Structures are given as C-alpha cells and as structure tokens.
Length: 394
Image (cartoon, rainbow, N blue to C red; front, side):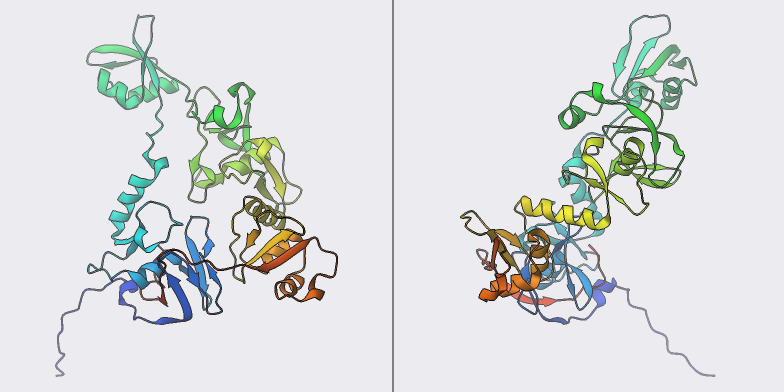
C-alpha cells in the first residue's frame, strides 16, 4: 500500500499578491502620477469613463494608480489590503501622497465618506396626513417619519398614498395619507421654470411601442406613473456620468429615452445620442441630438480641446497655435488628435514639428511644435513594477 504524505495547505492569497515581481520593458512611473512609455512619451494616462487613468503596456491595460502604488508604496502586510484608495476621492489624482492600500470594505466606506453625491440626504417621498374627520393636513418628510410619529405601519402609509386604502389606523387612531409630488431641487438651476416641462410616455430609440409604466419629461426627468402621483427623479447616476432607470430588469439610459420620446426615432439604429454641452447629466431635450459614432467621438475631442484640456491618447505630445496668434497653444497628446482638431494631416504635422519647411507648404493656417515635458516639483521617477497590478482592476 502506497503511503501518501500529508501536508497542510497554506492560505490562498489573492492573485494580485501571489504574482511575482517583474519589470515592464522600459516604462517608468512618477510620484506625481505620470507615466513614461518606452519611447519617452510622458502622460497622465488615458481617462476612463469611471474616472480612472490607464495605460496599455504590452497590449494589456493597467490602471495608473496601481502602477504608482506598486512602485512607491511598501507592499501591504495584510493580504486583504490589495485595493488602492484615493485619499481625496479624486480617481484622477494619482500622486503617491494621495494613495494607500486598503481592504475592500475600507475602500467602500471611504468612497461613501468622500463622495458628495452619496453624502446627500436620500430623496424620500414626503407625505401629508390628518386624522379622519379633520380638515387640515400635516406634512411628514417621509413615510418612515410618519410611521415613527403616528405608529402607522409604513406599508399602510404607502397603500394610502397609492390609493389602495382610504384610511389606516395607528395606536387606535384612524388617519388619512396622501403623497406630495417630489420636486427635483436642481431642476430650476439646470432648465429654468418648471412650467416649461411636459411629460409623455417613454419610448426607446430601437423600439416602436412605448415602455410600460414609465413617463419621461422634456427636462430629462422620469416617473414610474403619471406626473403628480409618483416618484419623480432624474434617474440613477452611474459612474460614467450618465443617468439610467430600470424597468423589467432592463437598464435604460435616460438621455436615449428623452431623445426617442421628443425628437423621434433615429434614421438608423446605429446612431448615438450626443450631449451638445458634453454634460452627461444634462438630459434636457434641447441638449440632445442624434449623431453617428464617429461624429460623437469627434465632438468629444473638440469640446475638450476648446476647454484647453489635454486630449489623452498614445503618441507624441504636440502643441498647435494659429499662425500669427500670440495666445497660448492648444495641447494635444498625439499628432493624431491634433490632426483631428486642425484638419491638417498627421504627416505634415510631424514634418512641421521637426522643422522641415516643406512640411507646411499647403497653405495651412496652423503651426506646430513638440510639447515641452515639464518636471513637476519634487517628482521622482522609478521603473514600472507590475507586481499585483495585472490581476486587479481597482
């Protein structure tokens, strides 16, 4: 009989901790949250929809804040502390002083503590109540408050507000309840007077029939029932800045519902809905338009350039300025992005940056140069280390 040796299985650590340390083929990362590619291109990384910065190394995507942490922070002693937290809550601030290793639960608690949109008091359904036989109504901020004040079950309060019950009893006293329509406090500041708002049955760009039990307004608000009798809101804000609403286990984007309802169905199902002011939270019908995917991307590039923001993309950073203009230059992270904005071919931009006179002989009104890489105060550069980065997303 063969004897089998017994052994004690060691605790399994997260994949990001168990990986061996390896370098990244010439890439470097700085304490200021910047990265330098093997070809010398320096950037803060590409901005993702969720707010994080990322780079592509050897055809694999890495989050910049994890690269900074792996290079400058000591490895955590606790194997559960594998997530990297931004102390100020800004996912784009990847300076080493702003990063720390935390557990998953610590990261979630810190996110709720620093996210102002989550710190706002939850929107509750205000209700009016009165004793049966009385004329005047009294207001409660929520159904829960009415339950605690009067001793009436919250479910009964809700049924009265929906019209399923005419009255209900709490602590031996009969009460009547009705709901106060919720008003979005941000509506006047964003869209003007509420009297300009009108409602219609919500429709989807790719569907002929209206969506059951869902109303949408031209101001970008949604309601599960007809206005005045239900919970009215702008929807649920997602990480990428868009607002959504859920119906029958489907997540529907509010701006697409508004466009389909008040503008009509697009001429092609492949068309996208663009925000004219680039504010993904402004779903007023006047701010929406149907565009192709390429038009949508080009609009995003132009809006960022007009705002003086560096357009992130892999490539050699360049600066552009109109000939004869003494104002500041526009910054682009690649010649491709500069070509998209100025309509000058990338090859001609390259020749202009290299000082070749024949590069701009086509009568272009733009002049170009390579962007000067500025050193941040106290910035330190180290080789990128991929330990614990490949297997982790956050």
